[in-house]
Image 1 (spheres, rainbow, N blue to C red):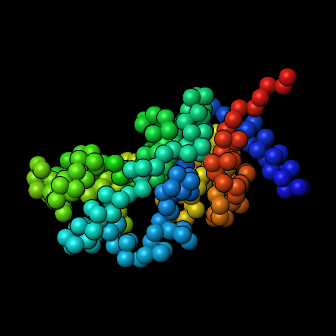
Image 2: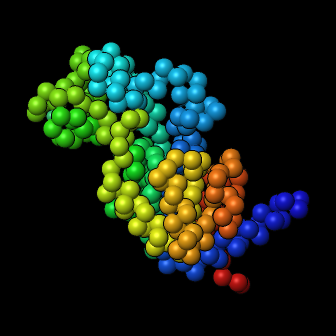
Length: 261
Ligand SMILES: [Zn+2]
């Protein structure tokens, strides 16, 4: 009971910060999409934890050198949970925050595009790990819709090559062993420094450089709010920490304070 009271007070306080903020910056990780049925890859129930072989499919070195890995990767893309996933209450709360004019930027480690599907404008979303709904040619850089490539796989091409140059196609995501895009990381760090309130949602904050955005925002004076099921290395510098399910908690935190009747 005492915990519940404290939690409700914390929610009111965070709402007040958001109401007063001009620039809210949000960082999201896999935890916001698990409630949409997209599994976390590295968590205790994660795909890679349960099946380490699956990690090979996302490793750029195996992918580029072994046609069998690519064939298996295309089969796994056919079955990717993103194709049937829908935004959940957490995603929708962030879209509503943008409608209120509060959202400065939404940095995401997710590749599922559920933020855009929920209604966030693409120019607010900074996708640090790329996007699974596009393919990129590893030779010429051509990009195309993923579904067109998947149609070719369904039609019998086990490892469809680039139609322009014959190069290897891959989902336009950052695989293991691939570098992040410096301009994208630069954008993420720039907006983090501009935040009045910085939310880290559904991310364990253990992957750098992006976890460093929390430190930058904090050093620049932002209130730090962390929503994650498990402890993170940044809980100690956070101004508020919530462990409750994101889909239930985030809409409460981002709702504007009702006027007193
Ligand atoms: Zn090409």
